[in-house]
Amino acid sequence: MELKRKRILIIGGYGMVGSNIARLIRRADTSIELVLSGRNPQNGEQLAAELKNAKTAYVNLEEGLDLSKLGHIDLIITAMQDRSNISRETAISNGIACITVSELADQIAPITFLSLHKPIVAPIVFAGHWQAGLLTLAVKHLATKFNYITSIEMAGLYDTKDQVGPEVANDVNGFIGQALIRQDGEWLSVPAKDNPREICLYNRSLAKAYPLSTLDVPSIAAFTNAANIRFDFVTGESIGSSRGLEASHDLYIDMEGLLLSGEKKKLRTIVSGKKGNARMTAVGVYLITERILGINGKNATIAGGLYLPETIVPVADLINRLKDFDIEFIDINAFGSLIHFESRT
Image (cartoon, rainbow, N blue to C red):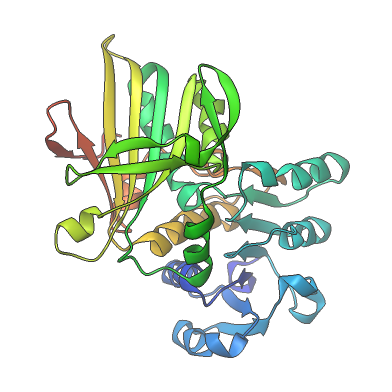
């Protein structure tokens, strides 16, 4: 299909995350028609006019998803909660590619089982990882420094000054539940509130973090085989705020193991999104979209099936790619000083 005929349906397309996704896609390609949908499509009309070659549509996932009213769609991006799997199941039934960003580790079983019973002819991407996979992609890139890894501790820092949509704000208040972690090679489901850890932040303050069942933990275990892996959610002052700038969203990554040099070491890296949480999630979705549709000079992913961000997005030039979106890698060495990464590809 010619590029000019491609159409993307963004469910939640005029919300905080959805609008950022739409703008990134439009920046890369003006020929794709964007359908910005939600329960109050009138709220998206100004954004549609700004983007051009865009329209709004009514979609309420609680009522189902009737594609006959929307016309031909090449890709569905669900930028909101879809606990009933409506968008994924509709995409599979109609042979349409789909990216979803809200599922936790215990919520992917229905579609996984469906895929074993029904052929999937287009890419279906589970992107319920933190920031739609950016954290896992960063870990995959950093893992190339190691011969083997024994421990990976990660955290996503939420700064209360960071503007987020109502769904994310509600999620922040409800994050503390059961969490999937890997400990000494065993998979454990633990009460998050009973398993906190203390993290030393960029500004040297200490903050209490709680584990969360994002898809990062099983994803990272699959390609590192590290015996100890956990992801935590923490609230505190971001790097942006500490610099007197706009609140950033910061990903803390502590990796321990045997380096390629033969030295046993623990490395800390912070991946900081200068424009905050919603923008960072949108970047993750955009990088996946590039690979599905083949926009911005990328090769399209034709084969159908289930994908994860790290199985569809290459990490060879990740640092340079993320710099284009105001996301920086900061290496903190053993002496506590900062080193800004340069590309080593």
